[in-house]
Length: 388
Ligand code: CP3
Image (cartoon, rainbow, N blue to C red; front, side):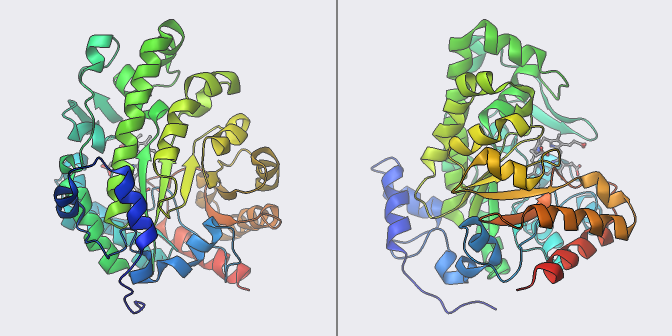
């Protein structure tokens, strides 16, 4: 399956090198596992460049509409539950062998067009020494929430050496995946801030908003630090071989467009700028973001993820030209009979017919009790129906 190795990718390498602090090239080469004439994005060695997924991200013609699912690796798969038995979520994220196995499971089973690196948005925060855990059935819980300027000092910059297991796991994955692209990801500044300020998951984000409205300078400084951490974390993944990156701003739909533009967009835009020109498409996604889609594209995404509340043709009008879209079947639809799933999938494909680039996905992550066979059938349906 693997394309014959091509040993040079000077442009991407030069750009990655240029963005990294000077004077640490030997350390960088060691940590990043790249030598001067290897392509850090790995695309030319492995043949991912011509995959349907990356073509759709670049808005080029595709042989079929590419499909992947947010949270495709996880509790819906019996093989996932088996390998995770007795191992805490965050511990599993720090074991490259386990990360590799779990990331590959949905690719083997469903024949999706891309893998997504198995991890969690709070992993870089944990790597910085923040005392947090992922509680089953609850989500990330932070022991000492960040609410004052003194609390902010907990957040130091992220160095590649803080997450060696990420570099190692991605290296293994890229070799295993061959021509199938690997999506790296990170939580966006607002969504990370919401966990850090609330101390855990929140329905109304009241403490987060209290800080945002009550102390705009502290809020801006918090988001700016999170932007730097997130950018560094994405660069580690790109240098190790990720073919695309997705910035999850899952909870930003809680904000109005004016508040988003003023209080969040500068930080998200900083993340996107930091990974611009590295040869990997940048995907941006949030839930309930119908009113924010245009701004989220403007923040610097190449691909805008859409939840199930806005049809893709309408989303394309809101986002404007020059961007691909990703989405957007309601994850709960997968609990309906096969015919109903196919009807909904057809609706999504019909709405996407005039798009410049479309990546089929759910409107949010796979729900833990989803029948995995329904996911496999959906991939097959989209591939068959869109084969050109
Ligand atoms: O998509 C994938 O397959 C990659 C894996 C992935 C996980 N988390 C694994 C995970 C990704 C991309 C994430 C991102 C993530 N984590 C987000 C953004 C995406 C989204 O869903 O909106 C958010 C908000 C989190 C925070 C988080 N982590 C929550 C809300 C939960 C669920 C808690 C629960 O148990 O219900 C987690 C835990 C988590 N992250 C699990 C997995 C597979 C479940 C933990 C387990 O299996 O024990």
